[in-house]
Length: 465
View (cartoon, rainbow, N blue to C red):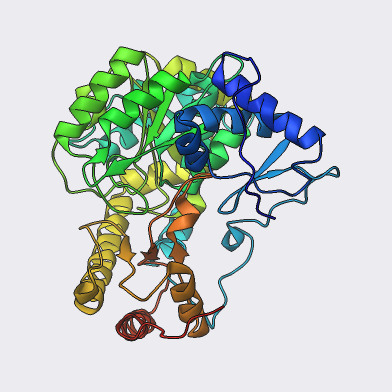
């Protein structure tokens, strides 16, 4: 239930976030805030009390960590129930069940089927015989060194610069790489992570696994706002900025060179490490990224999931030169390393040229989907970018994202609303993201786009009460 209650700062405690926590605990103790009561949003409290949103967010997060409060993604922050809270509904059910055949998947960012299954099957049956010491020991650095050399060339770009094999650590996908990197970089009892206030949900899931609060920073079409980032660093003492500077998910934007320079100056001032999540890996932009501009504090995470196959589960962490040992130690303590059969298969795909052929066919498929999307939804202001397999659609007047999604689902089309990318207690624009490669059939994909165009042209006139 909602509440019009507001915390107070008149407890005599000089530290504001401590005073907020004391006020909230007192209201819970005297029954003013019963179990299940929804606390007012962070920004509302900050505005009415004349303090920063970061101060309020810190108080809320501390009480969530102490289980006094419970944060529910997309809904807000509530007073915890006396009993254990029910497990949240999985946000990524497509990982455990096949996508229904009667629905068009414009929700999850999957990859095109361009024959990679047959290629990998053929490679598996033609791998060279194992060496004398293979399959009788645990993975070693030497065992995956040839693959790292291949991947160093695969991920090299004008954005990331030259990559050395010794500066790469292999992980079981990019999400695993994110957790490993958090474990390697974060320190102290309460490390804070910063990210865009609208961000890929995997960031907050990884932060939760390492029990680190994550704080959203406002951004615009050029990237994170420097003034807001400076304030967040000053107020939270954050250790890491986790960003999608190459291809922001869900808005498709790329952080401009000028904005990167400003962000890097702030990171150097506060000792902030920058994690650049670049999982789509097909960008055609040639301007230098953080790894070129700030090589001493830039860590890149990527994978083969969006360019070859998500079933392979091969991710990479590209470290600053000479600092891979820190990440490799965290990875080895978790899982020792990638299995030899997987390493051999991917290396064979790389050396045979099959991997690049698959990536080329994947790009042709994505280009076709982008052209279809622009042709049908261009009049409605859809935002797309070359070599990015999703689109960003702001709702026209008369539509809310929630009602538009319900209308689309009635036609068997699944989308992803902007609020699913918002952090807890964060705000989301009135928009949806469309994944362009989740549906195999071009015919069904184009029909879905035509249906969405029809809906956008005729917003509802009824008012629900």
